[in-house]
Length: 249
Image (cartoon, rainbow, N blue to C red; front, top):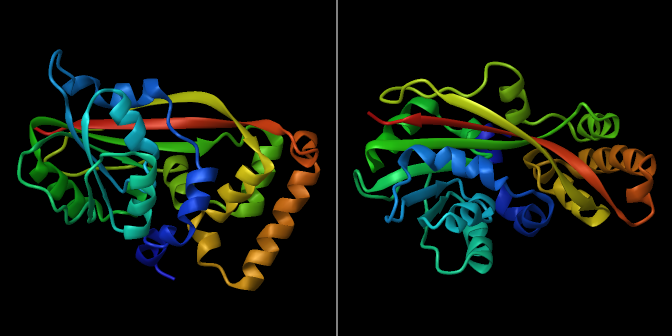
């Protein structure tokens, strides 16, 4: 299974993605867009790799005019049910169905690690006005907490986790250097939501029945050691949100 095939597998688990994945801290999204926000004018923003609309909602709440782009029509159908009135288009960061220089910002949540960096950078620059912003954001579980570290080991590391733990994301011309900030926060999560979080991962979606059974058994072992989850309650799942931004000249 190639990374490209994995990147377009999420529609098979759209409802699990919507339930299991967290949203984004409002202050992190505001930071992504701060350089292009102007008093009295709504921003024009594309959420690319929008999925079920986790990031889309946060951008809408800032008062922006938003379009959503994703390679998976099933994910966009779920987005339309959750975020009403948002235009949606099937497309990718490397081939955007959008006009030249029409946007103030392009944002991507949990998505840049799937792209081909050079053509994606060129294509996003094409649809941004001069001075426009590219914003990249990821929620990563905080493995500094013992049971969370064991959960990650049970599920297996993701491409995003590997990227952010090593070189970090990169962009190419015409964008300059990426600025980076991070936020630490917690999400209350129930056992059904945790199950959906596991089911929403590309490695799980594309796994064989035998591989799924092994992952489920490993996750069950972690759950049994966390009283709040095992007893049917909710626990705090800690996250670190990493945000990056770069300007188009």
